[in-house]
Length: 381
Image 1 (tube, rainbow, N blue to C red):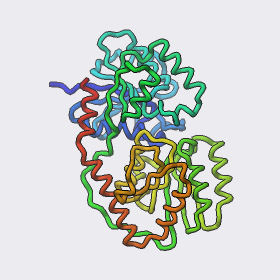
Image 2: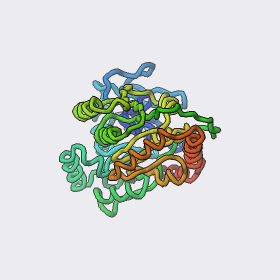
Image 3: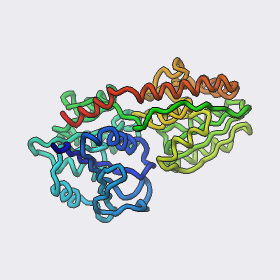
Image 4: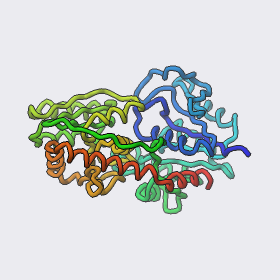
């Protein structure tokens, strides 16, 4: 008996890493379910905000990655509606899984291909793009698109993949109360259970890290404003592509005005296989984000025993009670300052307690088999 065949459309995929959560979510889903489903992926042959094709891949044809996943990498000059239609006609699939709402070629073109077909089984993962914080960016353009998409029933008949109840509410708000939705949380990286390794913190210095694109929704400017009020010695290293140059200029202006005890360094982008190891070299992940659909980097930090200091705008809640970190209201800026000061003054044993708590919190999440089953059902409905 053959495995059910799933064709995934996603604008950027491995070995890319600069597009953030969606590529990681998709790769993790495949890793957990590839023994039961045959996955094929269609993506661009470049990373996010890059024009350089990936090394060691063949463009405009199928490639087989080391994990056995087939990937068709489109070059910019060959990517077209006709090319995608030809690809869809060439083979039969049991499910087509579209990542995102607004992509011309990787969501809208496949949707148009299947419109009106009886029995077509298309799944659309909104990937947080319908959250208020996401829709605030290019608001007018997105609002106009969503209005016409609803008017012309562009997403009619699809099954929406929501990763939580709030995302399901967002889908119904934009596409109507009768929209078909399956809730299945994002999955963590698949790996064997690990043991916690003792961590030490340098005296008289707190090393903070942020791994995220430089964009308003990641709220880096707010983080820098918090640091203006910190009196302890702090090093804050930023990793990620600069998505919004204007916003980054505003951030750099604040950096230039920070007191001498605060050192901020921009380190550029990381490859996806470098993230966990890099974060493990720091004392605390500081990410006061305006909103995360999942926040893979948060889980990656916890998994290597690096506690996190984040906003309340993510799914990661109750961290302080678990000795894993802090999730704080963005309106309480003084609380952010207080936590940083407290962490800076921690003794080695105090820091080890919160580091072990972060690790245990992550491993408890990873060991839960229910999310895997919920994602399995997504492709069986």
